[in-house]
Amino acid sequence: MTPQKLITDYIVEVWMDGDADGLEPDTPIDELNIIDSAGVFDLVHYLQQEFRITIPLRQISLANFRSVNAISDLVGRLQTGEGTASA
Image (cartoon, rainbow, N blue to C red; front, side, top):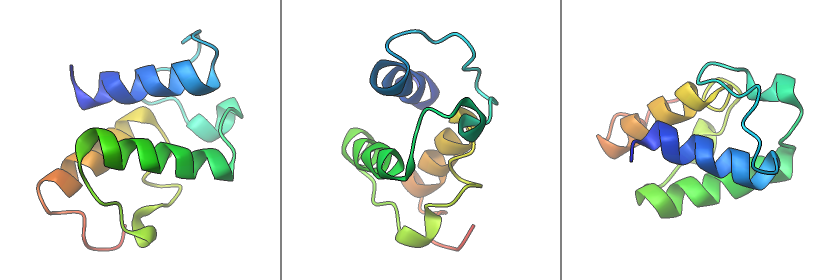
């Protein structure tokens, strides 16, 4: 399963009651009003566990968490060691 699919499935299950309607890979997550600031940290914890990465605090930004694609890109950068610079 791709990182994008795993991330989408997690968001749908936890914050959308299993209904993925309206969530596309480039949908701005903040516009859906489904995840609050505490939820972002729940998502960070999930990503760190699922993908065995560490997400530096400076990487937790609107730019990196604006959509499923942005989150998936962040995961990919961190897995290859490219995500250590500020976004």
